[in-house]
Amino acid sequence: MPYYSKKVLDHFMNPSHMGKIEKPDGFGTTKNLRCGDILELYIKTGEKQGERYIKDVKFTTLGCGTAIAASDMICELAKGKTLTEAKKISYQDIADKLGKVPPVKIHCTHLAERALKEAIKDYEEKRSQN
Image 1 (cartoon, rainbow, N blue to C red):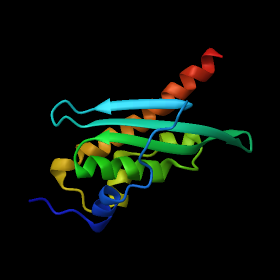
Image 2 (cartoon, rainbow, N blue to C red; image 1 turned 180 degrees about the vertical axis):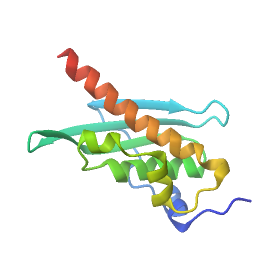
Image 3 (cartoon, rainbow, N blue to C red; image 1 turned 90 degrees about the vertical axis):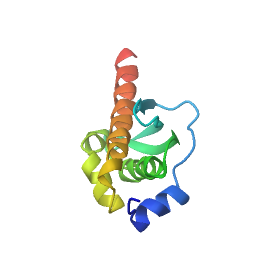
């Protein structure tokens, strides 16, 4: 049985960013066909000092405890960051913040990273069309 850090367990049992944002500025969805995890991530942006930033971020995840914990952690890491800063958040940043993530579950952190990048890309594509 894999060992999970207290942070993984806490973010799984008490996620603070779970939910949907109605009319999000950006939406990203990713899935892992091997394990069946599906993650949806919603962002709302704002502007400060002439730069767009992530004002709010929420997720819904159908998956294991590590997938939920990684989803919650990516939200925690991205909230308040400029879009440029948020694009630099990696799966390793998520894993490092969560503490011990079993190697067999590291794909969950990849899933969270991709969902955030997809949400930002969606926002940027919508904005370029206006």
